[in-house]
Image 1 (cartoon, rainbow, N blue to C red):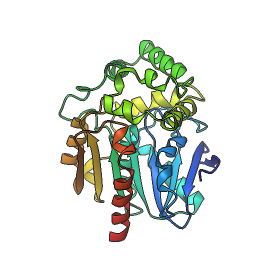
Image 2: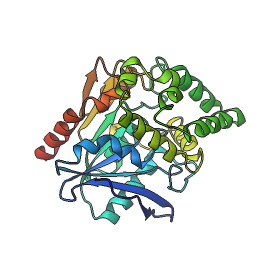
Image 3: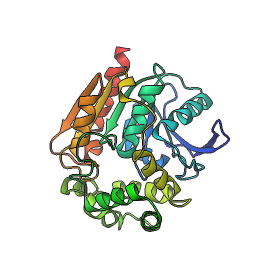
Image 4: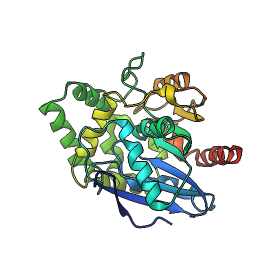
Length: 296
């Protein structure tokens, strides 16, 4: 069902690595992968493609996979890449769905590309770094250290990211859980029990770092800086999904987003983590999209 990657040219001449999945007659769902990640993270939604209701579009953000790097990009920069991708594919209105580090990018589309973007889903997505709560409280130790270094910048931070990139570039189904270390709660480890799930995540990790650590560095920079749009600009419906057992993006982020975005519907899953939030609730996610498309 997944097609081979294709390269689409952005307005500034950069190459974007794009994947599509599903029936071209279905409604368009733009999927924004996590950080780190790549277009093949779309594999996680493959069970929803068989119905023919949805046509999924995903691209590797600049610096990931075969997408050319865009140094200094902010979160809002994703909108131009979404527009040029959908235009090249001949697609019109869409919903924007982002998992983890993809969450802010999904919200950017809702803020800056309405009404073509008719709604957004933030799945375990991060809040702005200047939000009025302790941004790293509740994160696993690896994330706490990473964002401490990211705030400071410099050689120590770049060396740490290079080390992560080298490790994840060698990800396999056998070592992927170990690579995540203290970022996986028990429920997330159970969600990754199947070989297929671990294989999908390992493949996405390898693809993410195929060209080095640039995409990951640029994602961190984008999260640690102004996003380039205001959450108050969002006028479309938004669903904010978050779980209490998430050691990558703690539930405080989801609660804050739900409270600070107009028209936001919180979806709070007490017993879910960062991975299980999506993998255990694909049917609910599809039902939510279905209801949205029916209400337009």
